[in-house]
Image 1 (cartoon, helix red, strand yellow):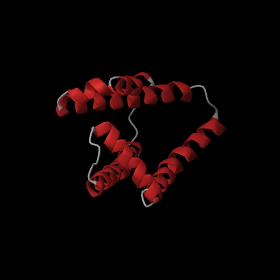
Image 2 (cartoon, one colour):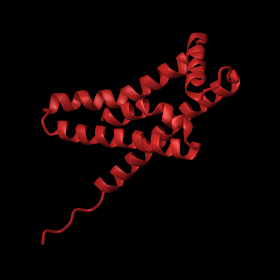
Image 3 (cartoon, one colour):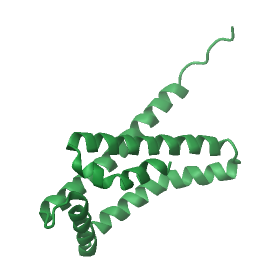
Image 4 (tube, one colour):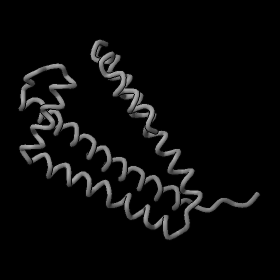
Length: 141
């Protein structure tokens, strides 16, 4: 779970020299591997916990992403966070003076895309679970 993001950070100078498509594909692959590893770890860990710990996990998953999203939305209104985002864009983008409005707007749209994707996936998974659990019982063979 830690190896892919550390690999991307270690390869950052090399990634800057690659075409955008290659760099985006490799960083996207690293993000995907990290998410898959976290799901696998969560499934393995879930087998060893009791009902109280499962309730804790359910509560934290239900409220954690909403609270984190709200916190990021609030932080995006603060000028020191703008400076931090701009300095990160300058360092990672190799551009000493990036366009402030463009960087902040792009960052905000990316954040908005994540929140919308989470909301849509939550709704779709809820609907799928409801349909699956509402089906008629099967006859024993």
